[in-house]
Length: 349
Picture 1 (tube, rainbow, N blue to C red):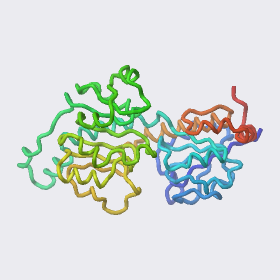
Picture 2 (cartoon, rainbow, N blue to C red):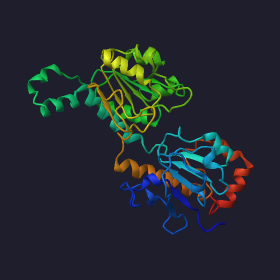
Picture 3 (cartoon, helix red, strand yellow):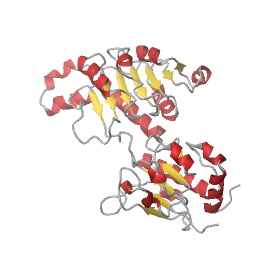
Picture 4 (tube, rainbow, N blue to C red):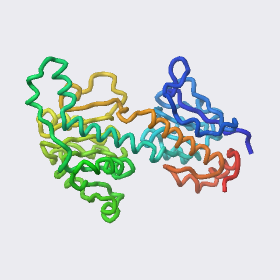
């Protein structure tokens, strides 16, 4: 058995002085005996270069893409742990072909994203951004033009009923809202009923919901899932929220319905073409809240994600399958099993 299992962090975890940017990224989840040392990559690149992974047995990836080219020399790379739950930046097929396990921090983001979603719902319906401006701009007497609305007796529609969607429903349980509606092809009606929600098709959800909150992954089935036709089904008093991925909502169509007042407002944490480094077409609209794909970023979130990813690294190093594996077929490959046996520190039970 090897003496160490080398962990690499992508360089966007550190600042220009080489120190960690974030207060706590859960590295206490790794053994303290020196068997799993951590190294931060020197250079930040939008796409990881194969030379950057030399000597790494596991890599924890924040924002860079992982492509076929990234994995060109991966004979000693056993796993990639995504620091989050999205994996559209990683070529899953390439990972499997290279005998590399890809796993995500399943469950670690649920609470923080759910809190951010509920916060945005309240901010939109109570016109918090606009009322703040009234005071700052000396427009006190315009306050009667911005009557808000409460969440009670309103209907939430959840697109994608995974851990985050379920956490949102749970947090909202005390607000007196109607039974939530859910669109998710992977959840059956019986399971939905047990969770206290009603499964419907997307069109029905859009027609009936006062809030449409997107929590599904971005893939070939969900790209532009909500475009001009779908937006046209929403109530003029409804709000659309996206804390999932850019590309699920067609942004030009969304701007059109916001400008024309065909929906009441929106809140977006993610966009096509991130990072956004110039004014976005939605920035001039007062009925929109925007965040730089960080609305849910908290110290607790990064700690929990890091601990979850580190736990996955430890599991693989000790011969166990981690939770949150995206490409489970890799375990059926004899070439992967040979690599795993060669690189793991101990045999798991």
